[in-house]
Amino acid sequence: MKKFPIPPFSLEDAIQKVQMAEDAWNSKDPEKVSMGYTVDTEWRNRNQFVNGREEVQIFLKNKWAAEIDYKLKKELWIHSENRIAVRFEYEYRNDAGQWFRAYGNENWEFDENGLMQKRFASINDLEIDEKDRKLK
Image (cartoon, rainbow, N blue to C red):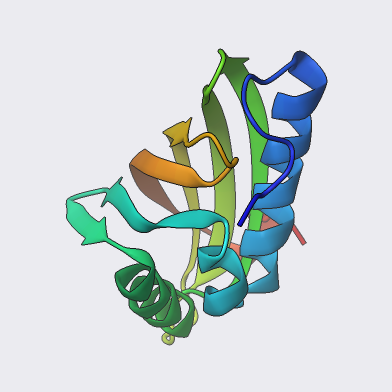
């Protein structure tokens, strides 16, 4: 399976990959999102390690059950032949109604078919008031 664009990435390709990832994650569909990753993908998400598409689907299902009204914005930071770095922010509320904004960086590495084989995310959460939301 190929997920275009494929490496080596031009600036336009990298921007497209970032937008595709943002759109997929905002769908909150774990199966759809997982199809952008290799079968044996490796993740570090905060202090969690996730390996393989099946674990990605479980991770995302649990994430979006806990992070209600999730909305994400990603932005290209830099790219190379098969790597992309992004900064991002997203907002969500927990089941008690407290809103959060999460900020972070991700480093991505893609295989020759354009599937992400490695994803390393550093993320910080900040409690916010609903009136301070930026992403709606």
